[in-house]
Image (cartoon, rainbow, N blue to C red; front, side, top):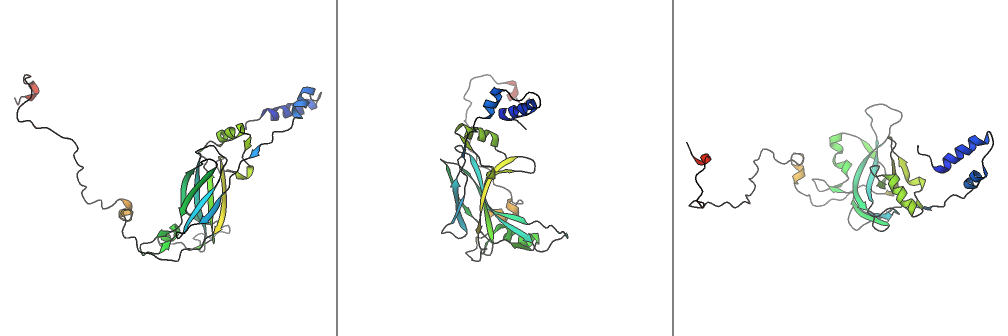
Length: 249
């Protein structure tokens, strides 16, 4: 772990106290007040729209311009019948919708449609569409968790250095650590969202419904159009002698 200059001096001073104590210069440096950084804002608001199953997710983020944030809506699902008997049965989850947004000014905003249309016209969430195929009996939670995340693929340390120039610091409550030790930013809000019950006009067969999106592979594909214009003059347009490659024998 990288140590700051203050941490090194504290260690040196502590060791020196065992013999002669700290020098006056070290004591003066250590007695300086710590810099009071402004805490970075990172919040989220969720509002339903006039469209069925659609929500506007927005918020503030005191991050560098065009920083990419991932916004997702997640519903946790509790297994009601486990294939393996275990005392600690952790819930699974389904990602209902997600989007990648950029910070503009200090704001970000997106619209997330949580419902999809089943072949019979019923509105469903993603996990409901595949529930028969998975053959899982689950109990969904009443709430949907809306999350905004600065993914671990971004260099958080570099962003922190940029913020420090403006006397800003990320609050520790926004910083999370993956199992691999990578740090990332995240905050969220749990909103009670009822399961869809309405029905609409069936969408009809879509290209992605045929052969897993590959379409009918046995059908020959049409030849692409030829955009080249070739000329076929009746007479040779050159007086150069015949090359050996042009002779038949």
